[in-house]
Image 1 (cartoon, one colour):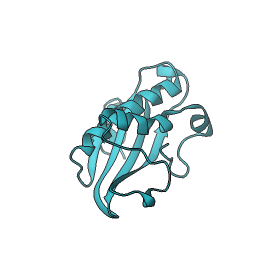
Image 2 (cartoon, one colour):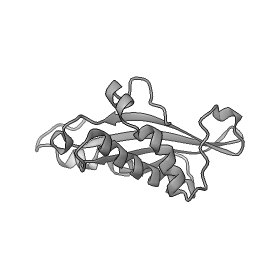
Image 3 (cartoon, one colour):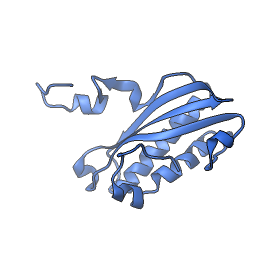
Length: 152
């Protein structure tokens, strides 16, 4: 299970959706099982250790009527306690009719992004939709803003 940062994710999302539990499974699957999941204390692990935190999740019920569902997370890869890679990742979707289904789709995409990054990890990488951040908004949200809408 990938932990949420404090204050991130509604109680309903945390209780009803399994996407945070499935995210690590997606990383293992897309890395062709070259990644091992350790659910216990990562300080006890040997070798490379990837820690993930969900930093933002937006998933209002109502399917595509309520707009994009998205999640952001950050990760750090350490070996022997030394930081050897880090990233911020984001994905969004408007397809699926359920909130949990949308988050599962987002989790699969994030799992694929992270598995690809693990092949050649770098510091401060931007994965998925995080690569196209424009003025603090993802590209999709920025281009759909009404004309004259002040960007932060």
